[in-house]
Image 1 (cartoon, each protein chain N blue to C red):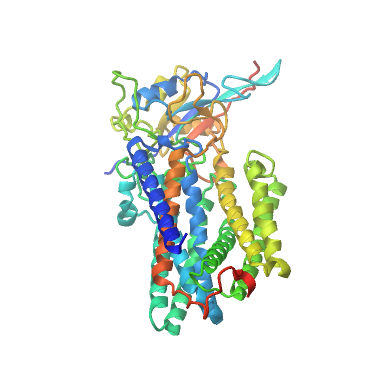
Image 2 (cartoon, each protein chain N blue to C red; image 1 turned 90 degrees about the vertical axis):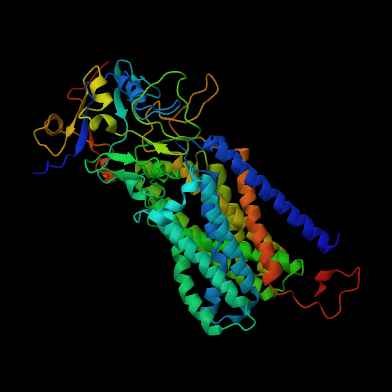
Length: 401
Length: 214
């Protein structure tokens, strides 16, 4: 298959998924959120988990661009456009995930015209909009024929604090709630920042590697290795924060906080928690930290994919641990809030939830939208590498350089 | 001269509560609460199920905990509501403006008491049964106990208070030290749920004065 055919198939797939997601959203709007798996106990699910995850994924771009700019690491310049495109697309995806979660999305404008300033959700809307604007300005600056070093430095100085805030405020949406002991810890914001850095860098590594192999961009192996080294540092910090949080909860023995933590350690969600820590944390850390494995591009990409999965599970576990265990669980409990089959109970003392096909479809559509934005960005905003001086003769393996 | 500001509150006498759910059912009728949702529930404190005691015979223990919106003075739900749909009225009643609610359910995550419910689908009521005095809510908004605001505004007590066969509920103005509710809370040492969360509920529970053996 030629590149053109693959490209068209890829676009076709994305458009099909977006159409599926959009139709599922219309279906949900008509019938209400009852078509999701959500209920009065587990009132937030896949959409909010994905929102958290994609806010985190947006970290890579601005860190690489702003951090490298301020540190004077100009060799990262070859990745800066791709990194900012990934950031802008991720934050757009994150914002899009909030809409299908709303019972009345047509009223969302109210947050803008009469936002209630005590609400962390309003802070989040403001900071996410700012972040997206900064990413767009960065992209414009980077796409001009002559990059202005001075302008990029100014943008870096503005964007770093905003990047820190975007992850902190997203953490505070959850962390400031007294009703949710597992979230209500000062460590949540630092933890969200470290997780964001891990997943953001991992996404950049994966996408850069794939595009490099497809010869759509040119990335030096050295750059990918430095990114992997940086990711290893962030993974270790992220694991350390998680350990500190779990140790505090378990050792202090404060009832609700401990119960919610134990749900992860050896309860209902242990089957997600331990893969998160081992496969999504420890394994990629060693692959990226040990020089021998770090020098192997394929291994690093696999490790980055594992880290991406690990952080996704982490978002899921953070949400699930708190939301499935209400503070008051006396029987009969809370009502689920929807019709049930005769004989089945609609009373729930603790939460029970699994996303429905509607939620999966909408999620797939929104993620496809992000992939579409990245594809368009790479096609129109990222410079193609100059063709190799003499293309390799047919049959010769390409990896021999 | 302006009337002194009222601050409505409730005391629930756990010694008198029978666990009969009359208040819960009357609440549904009065407030037009759709099928599948309850604003007011009577929980059992004891064993693993409703009306089940804890312990082994003959050392059994059981009591009831009627639970609905606690109308907190420092209401976590009102603090997080992005549009101000959930607000605290001048007289302390925590209300939802259903036209402003965007259905984000942040308030449900924020409430420590789990008393808020969401209209997941188009609300369904028992067919042909015209019940309730509170305006019906649309799908996609959160709802909860309003202290029967439609009755308060007519100078009446909430429906759960007047309907309780055991007269376990006392309602009134917490700002008036001589009101029945203020006196009961003072004399009986009224306690609030999850006091340590700092939400300052205006629903007080009067504990049992003697140990109940079954």
